[in-house]
Image 1: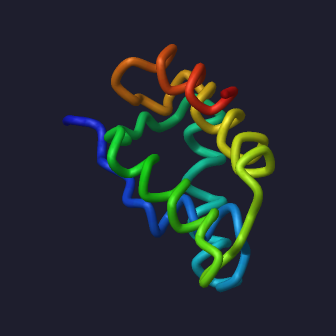
Image 2: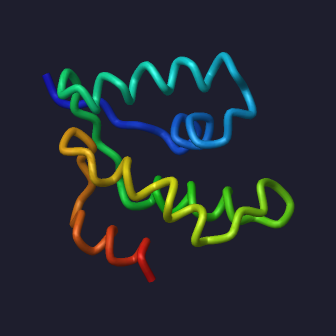
Length: 94
């Protein structure tokens, strides 16, 4: 079976906690990824969308440094498959 794709909404709910029920489901999902029991795929565009939404002045207004701190641990998980992981990590650190 191919690894499932994760949508931006799942990552945003995990990181913001603005919907406790959805955050709980996202947390359970990423705990499985962290434990090595699940592999998920995340396209570049999804990560770009997460950064855009979290940094939006109309929505969450988080500074990019905080967004990087939130995303770096996820992108670094072995079960979090993103194309060109090194380039994504480098971009988050810029």
